[in-house]
Length: 337
Image 1 (tube, rainbow, N blue to C red):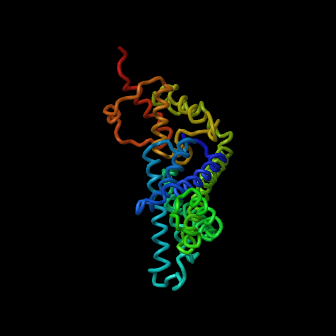
Image 2: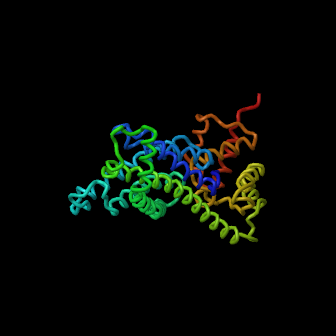
Image 3: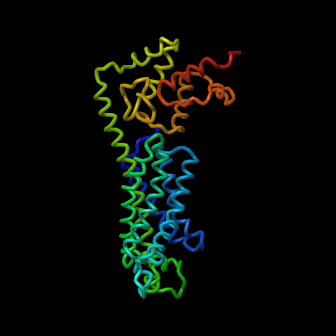
């Protein structure tokens, strides 16, 4: 089971976004074409590290996917911004004005697209088993904040961007002949300011979105807990539902205790037919980890893959499926020497 996102994660993600942008601006901005992917890659790596540290995402391939998706946010945003400014049927850029005079509409579209790519990847990974349509609508709503952050960040260029340029200049990270006026006209101050504001803000957005999503889940479970109160959803009822098919009480009892021992599920009135995706989270990796933990709690040996393949491709959709699978594992334990 995944851990609960809290306020400390929100703060840490925001700080991680700020420092990942600062590291790129001060140390890694001169990498040619690769530089388009580095800001997002650094941000994605920082977000992934935070999610791993807090136990929200624990699988390596998921962390790499989040980092990879983040790495394309900046070039994707830049491309849509450039298209709307200069190549669309109705270009938004005013002829004769410097590059620093970017259109707010183009900035908003670019910032929204970048946020959508990052959040869609994150939500699809964390909300496995949920409706894709609902996940996309949720993503779109949060992504609009990314658009606003892009507009705010760019327009803070004359102040925040100028301060960032001064920091680079003091650290001898600019050419000796560079001047603040050149950086402003070329849009560099706007770009640096946008990066810091967007990545810092999106760090907070990721954390808040996860915390809000968890709160919504808690409210839904609270309502379900209230509806089931006094209706026989007890540990004894759960265990009894498997006696007629000869499953030892120890297995369903262990499953019930495992899922009702902590967090928002503590003392929850579970049913054998409760689906993981509706009650406990449908992430296949989490379910697999739960299966390993339950096998250990039952003091059984986890079977080799070639033996487990004999069980077939039956997915563990409900708690009943988990109990039946554990009983099958019990029946196929190696003989004691």
